[in-house]
Image: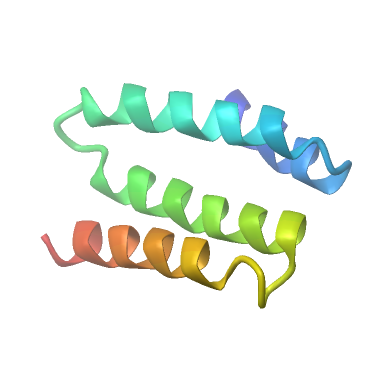
Length: 77
């Protein structure tokens, strides 16, 4: 899970696009796995956090909501 740790570090240093790319790659890989729903949901939550860090809560509200809904649907399955 090196990619997740690196993505979190990139968010901390405000390298948002690089972090977003890593998270999206992780989702692509995990979608091919049969048991990746929990990890995908966590990654969606990380993307919501990234959006808030990058844009601020008010400006990122719709993006955050989208990621939260995706995570919720994965966890309900």
